[in-house]
Length: 103
Length: 151
Image (tube, rainbow over all chains, first blue to last red; front, top):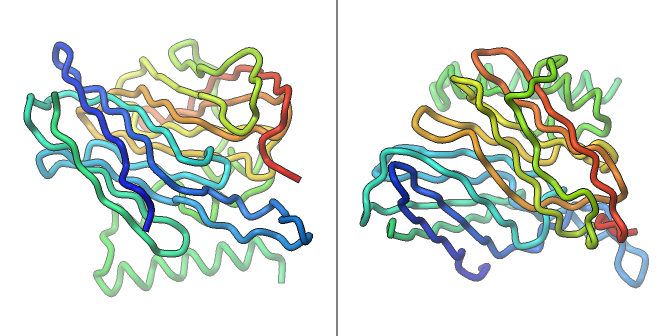
């Protein structure tokens, strides 16, 4: 299982800025290893972030997203202490969910 | 059979079945872009998958470096000042898989997203935004000194 995501959520005025660093190889499926065999595609396909049970972002990634994907977005209506939950699912069906409180 | 017809038939059939079984709702079935579309190989196909041609708008901006030292990790962001922006897509024109990321923005979320993309070579980076059902775009050229797609 991948390492935990690092999530930071900070409230400034009425906007919460969320920054997430996910841990994932993000193989697009077009690289070859030393032996010349194609490294199979293994990348995060879907990301969903929710706060207080409400979806605040859905994202779809392709193999073009860098290894250990970084994602930053902003939403309104969050309060200090609310949880932001982020879940990713990859093309092999693996998934990971982490959360952080809004600071 | 032509591969894209196959894919189109597969996905429309699959969604129709899922909706009839009640497994996914009608609105999910009509989600703008599905994962099959993410595998398109050209800019034209990516725009088609998103929904057609987009008008350039100065209310949309794509933020990417003029020169990227390391094509494996290029910070790219997109913002839209258009009201009712519901989707933002990032396209890296010269990548093998140009449609790189899509963001679905619900009400209450700001149309301002950033991520890091791989770029195989110097290319245009295009942000396409759907606002009120219409498409708008902005383009920025990023030069890459060391390509990031491998091979």
